[in-house]
Image (cartoon, rainbow, N blue to C red):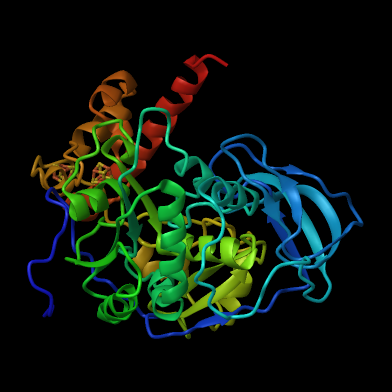
Length: 449
Ligand code: SF4
Ligand code: SF4
């Protein structure tokens, strides 16, 4: 039973999947860098970065190897030192081949000026503008999954003002523990990163939301936060999908983001704890984003773990380090069981958006027989956005995309709560994702170039 009283949460829908946090007590371990790594130039939302190195160039860790391809884009840095051996298309987690820079690894030489000592640096000396420019240069993106370049979020459009920063320490996806471990092991750095983001936004208040199933993280950060003005740790009721932006905003502030709107419309900016840590490293240590914590887990995984992994390392190496691929693995999922996506092969690189690798058995991955909808409305009752998933699926099935758009299909955050609760095993999320991608494609084609 939770020791916390009157916990906040979001008011509509949501579910309680079992959390299976098998690796929660496993300290973060550095994963050995293999002899070859392939670093995709598109690891973020927005335009791919443009390679600026040539084959046979020697590079150091943290050196820019591809430059931002536009405003909504970001630099990509070498995550290992060595020789550029290929600039070619490589399959990534999406299953598509995309441009990547392959490095034949030699040693671990870092670019000059990057500070690797664990000493904590509290004093923030850069101005708001300097912070935003530095984060852009260092390739910092949202590490909660969206990989949205941070400099864009920290520069609200004209007329919009942020008055509060929310830090997402919810990690509501079952199995994943990378954010939890980071809060335990890098709490001070996360709070300094939070202060840096507050300074960049010009806000004086920040709330860090953590679900009550992580009492050690709540206690640790609450103690540390006493030394940081304006930062408050808020324990939240366990409720999926509380880590989704709109649900977290409502849980913490009772503000509702309008349909089709953005958090900044209600004066809020949300960042993840992993992003706050990356911000600390960029501003206080001059360290670009070249690595992240990735959970490798699953009920049959021999040694569920949290690894600190350089971008470009093949996912197969992480699986090997966690004890190897269990017999009868049915699916390898990038992310958690609710919002993650199945991989075609584990021979794809870890990127900025890789939060976890989940291995599930053939038996677990088998879907039940799809039955007719019995109009029970469970999918409606559990949808945190008040949508009608059974209707959206039916409209997409029939190709009625305009009607699906009118029914707010684009507002769906793809949390999967509807499919999770459907007694008829209807593939609601698959159809909703299909419908969204078709409608988004049509909108792109219609929009002026
Ligand atoms: S319709 Fe979308 S937002 Fe609603 S429960 Fe299903 S996946 Fe989640
Ligand atoms: S939960 Fe499944 S069976 Fe019930 S209304 Fe929704 S789609 Fe139909």
